[in-house]
Length: 251
Image (cartoon, rainbow, N blue to C red; front, side):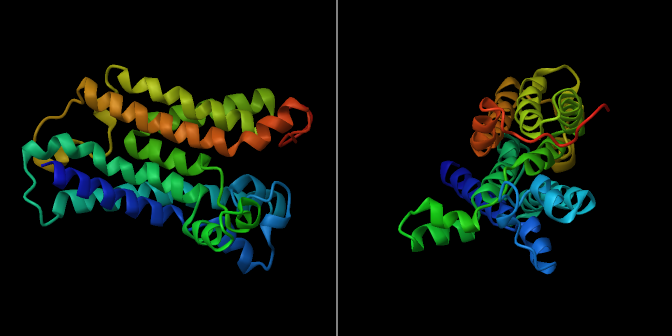
């Protein structure tokens, strides 16, 4: 059982990482012959793409980044459900492993495969490898939340919008909206909205126990930590009052 668990964890993590390494911001920008890494924050995420290519393209990139983590989890659910392994009701304690794909999609989005190759090629010179770096993981983390529970995703998005309207800083909104849903997994009734519950997998009733809820919380907090790490330059600029607001004037 231990070997099986380790294997499935590694498999789902690798699937998630490879999915995350697909950078839609860089792909779309390249199609327009614009290098987003030379503009604004030099980031391939939706916010910086909107500066380079307009808000509509920026929103499109953000949606695609969210969808890729969502689809990575769906793909792993299919493997979990229809794999060659002899899954049964006793396998339900491995249910949480499908969400590892989501966590590692965020990792792959922030530090994609091409970035790792560049890092090795430049003998771990991060300044040179930055040319292949990814985004900041906000939209991709949002996709993970929606896959865990539509309510978690909506809660995070609502917090993001409210904080953005108050502060007008995407960086502040992004870091705050990732943390809050982590503790809401303990709310009564939240278990009814997990996208792929055990009733779909094993035709049995499903109510996450305290251990599963803690695992979900830890996964969300891991994504939150990644988002904060990727926003360290923004936090430094905020402390120096140099961070740019997304819009000006009254809303």
